[in-house]
Amino acid sequence: MFRSMPRKPFRLPLLVVALIGVAILGLGAYQTLDTIAFVVRAEHAEARFTGAVARTGGNHGGTFFHPTFEFVTSDGRTIDFTLSSGSTEQPYSAGDHVPILYDPTRPQNAQLISFITLWLIPLVLDAAGALFVSIAVFLWAKLPRR
Image (cartoon, rainbow, N blue to C red; front, side):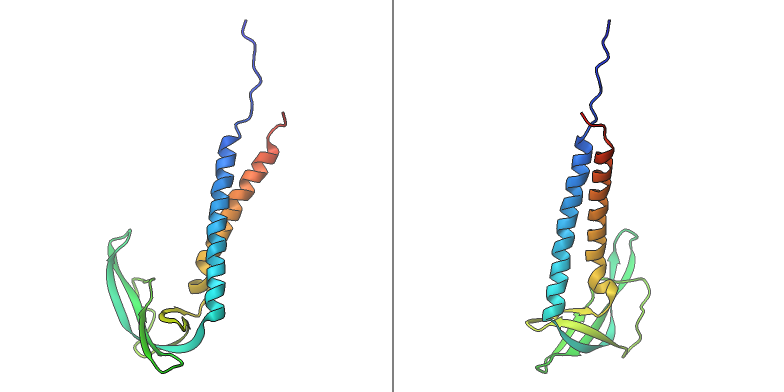
């Protein structure tokens, strides 16, 4: 006769999900702190749209236009910078002015002042990490006790 052995719940997948969540949360925390540090040390300026750099590739294989801007630092230097993000349509017209933040020690490190530009990546990473950890903790709590 075969005796039925009680099945132990398999906890390893939940542990892996929790560890992935903690890693994503750590990356999100790093990105959040890095963005906060940038915003605190950055100087404000007004940048003028000067054109776009066309780059091909990505998942769609299409052409993306990366806006290029020009601004003057507080010490009078003229700086050009191109956004790392691009789109298939150009949202700016020649001469448009936009508010930016720039690192005074490395003025080429400039960002548009917008929620999406500054906070989207930290927010998504923090939310994804919290979701992974929450799911693992919730399901762990539902497992039968030994």
